[in-house]
Image (cartoon, rainbow, N blue to C red; front, side, top):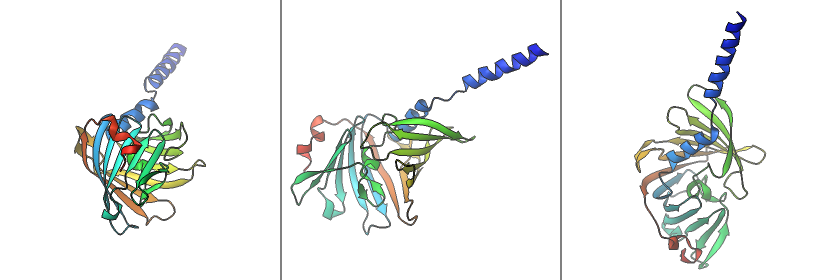
Length: 233
């Protein structure tokens, strides 16, 4: 009888270890769903209830820390381009004819921050921890590894079946919810099934919402000259 009990305990330990969850792997797989390559192009539309006109951007991404955002609409903002290099960001202001330093967390339009479009990868920026799970999804808590990121902490839900991100809560240092985002509109684009719609809702006023829609996504390579502050205008 004792041998049987001992065998059962050993088997339980074995299967528990076999099912041990690698949270870094989950986060990397989830990142790969939203990012088709190290270098890619996107056409992004942002519609906000608090803005009278929708915004349209062309986004050029190279590696994990270089992104150029060109403003196409509204027409009055055309030429107001943004450049991200690592955690640093600049916006070119046509009226001033020069680039001005801004932050990743600063508002781009509506509820969308600069970093919501320019810095989509989480795996290299955040330390993940599993805080819960059910049959359908994992719940991870992400803590920023460096200063200057769009959000200090993030709570995300990832679908177990296919590593699709479902929902994210963007938090302050004190873990107060700033905004909630839902990832939807999954379709075949840039060689994989990816979310093309991100609905962002303010925690202060749930009526303040923005829809980020990826209209186009293509794997492309870009020259280094695209990502120089002197070439922003």
